[in-house]
Image 1 (cartoon, one colour):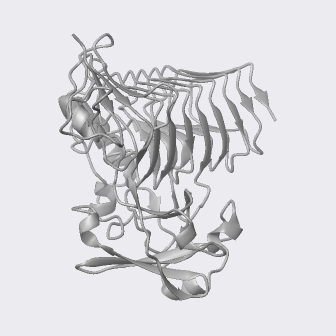
Image 2 (tube, helix red, strand yellow):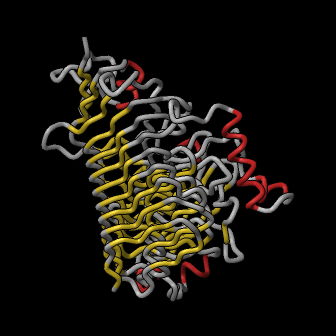
Length: 431
């Protein structure tokens, strides 16, 4: 018989997990949940990384993580920081003990990986948020005190809200320019965790995540030749459903349906041998060697989500997203800060979107709308609305098809870039 565990910010993990005596953390419920069980999450902010230890056994025996009816619980990878010390003008300083971060300090870790372009400077996985809006990282304290607008950003005036960091053995020191805002009167948060909802093990199948707000986490750059981290994702599993969620403020990718680590992890960048396309071929053969197959991987559903303000992708994937359905999502403000770049940036960026259906999505204000790269085979792109994207609405490359693009509306300055074969374009509207 299935069970329904309740979680509340006013609960306690020593309690029974009932609606009257709920657990305090989602993780505690996840540790207990078995196939067929439900975890009902009540209103509040849960500052934790949910690492499910097991999944379901099939569509009829899932583990469901759901918001309580009519409630909007938040899973955050950030912590609120108070006690900012005034330095001068609109600049403040916070000294954060490193014990807050545990084994992962995003202000020590940098953004890196294959196909990443750093623009000749270092970017950390950390972030500073003012009332939910991320500030712009700079290198020196002088740049914080005397900020200059970053002209490439979608909102150059907001880039004057700058921050920098220093890390020693005991503390992480952050300087931030809050402009006209007083940090004592606002909500200031910083990245602490890499993930919001992500199994550390692969093969955690048949999980549904429904109705949650997931925000502010520090996954690293996610190329197809590395472990593709995301704020939320199934991590090389089968049969997940991510629905009716709001996903925002991932340092790189919001949802990852992508690759695990053993098939390759940034060898082009770290070893310098073999070019990226050779490494990509290696990854595909390595995936076959470890048992990549429709019976074990993919067949996910990503629907009815709002995904925004992630700096690399709203949704990414390589091989892990095969046979998936991605529909009715609203994706916007992807790569809107434009501080770093690379060949993996789009509202949706998929490698090997084999037999995927991408339909009825609303994608705008992104660097590129939808990018299908390598092995778009049996892929259908249908009924999507794309506009105000910087490069193209749709880019298809390095594929021999067959794939179908039908009944879409493409309204950006450049609608399509096609460097592939075997595509059929039917009944589309180009602006």
